[in-house]
Amino acid sequence: MMRDTAETVLALLPSDVRYGDVRVVRRTHELVLVELDGPGEVGYDDSLGLGLRVVIGGHWGFAATHRLDPQGIDAVIAQAVGQARAAGGGGHVALGQPVTTRATWSSPMEADPFLVPLSTKLDLLSATVKEASTAGPLVQQVEASVDFYRDEKVFANTEGALIEQTLTESGGGLMVNAGDGNDVQRRSFPQGVPRQIRGHRGDFATAGWEHVLAIGLPENAARVASEAVALLTAPQCPDEVTTLVAGSNQLAMVLHECAGHPMEADRALGTEASLAGGTYATPERRGNFRWGSEIVSAYADATIPGALGSYAYDDEGVPAQRTQLVKDGIFQGYMSGRESAAALGDEPTGASRADGWQRLPLVRMTNICLEPGESSLAEMIAGTKRGILVDTNRGFSIDDQRMSFRFQTEMGWEIRDGKIGRMLKNCTYQGVTPQFWAELDALGGPDEWKVHGVPSCNKGEPLQVAHVGHGTVPGRFQNVQVGR
Image (cartoon, rainbow, N blue to C red; front, side):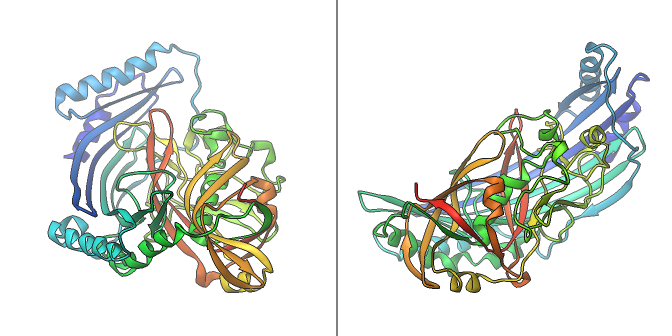
């Protein structure tokens, strides 16, 4: 039915449409959340609709609808075509080489999460909450949740492309708040989120129920809750310039903000400006701007098996691929869609994605990764006379050019004479992107490389949420301002 709908829409487009594409998407989302005092939320959403883009007279028109009957299809075509025609002639839309791919693809999984009984999911989360509650009466709030997504998508265009894809994504996590009347501290597992988001928390992958089981929520719940309680009496992070060792979990978010968003091509071209939407990574800096030290290289790769930002084709029909962003510390290039790549004189990198059928595709980061180094977390700590170790992001602030930033972490530890010392609370650090990464002097090796799946990347107006991944290792930075 979805394929038939896409082909019907294209067949009905008027003759003055120079280019058109249609996406028919069925999106399914299930959320199960358990709190300290019992089930907090069980939700199930299922939507089906189509989005249509057309180019007439060098201008775009876009419309979307959930009505897939003949009347709905006629209406959505009339709206998209009417928008483009209303702009008049004289415009210019360049898309590069035609996209003619015809393919079918489904993401791999071992156990379909939508077939796992609700009782099994509730049992897992209830056991997690029960274990967290053993940390004592100072535990005030516990949320354990799992989320599952499935996108069934058909993409077709007037150039001859017809692509059918099914993506299944799974994840889960735990958040514990502890309080003693004077202070409140939070611990998240297996990773934090940039802001308080109910559900949608934890680590996610393009996989099935097996990924949730591999996280180990019940097995880690008591430890995580005990750390939240211990933070209440931990000393404050000192205010000093020191050595910073960041775990791979924390470094994932720094990479997200300092490399992922700035190297999206639409920001460099000035066609996207919301949510700190500018960038230092301007086209004239490609190949000559020193982004970091010589030991750091970063890339985007939408082909990593199981990673949350992976797929076979983007929402313009361009194949997923690996793109070098930084090489030996030098800024190299962008993630792009067809139009932004053409404007830069490049080939598109397959990074154009839309949040469902009712939104326009935007340039979105995929899996932003660090190439591993030759050190290890243990060696970095052993080689540090004085510093702090931080992990698990709690929040951040960054300027509109993605240069000056400040990160807050849930937890930290002193490093003294090569050994881990006291736990620290309210750890923050700040820097300027090229200066901060220039101070990187050690990266973990291949054995410590891990992909973190983040389902809460925001961009655009109206807001679109993308699912992305970050392959990172621990890193050590010199001369970092912490605690201010």
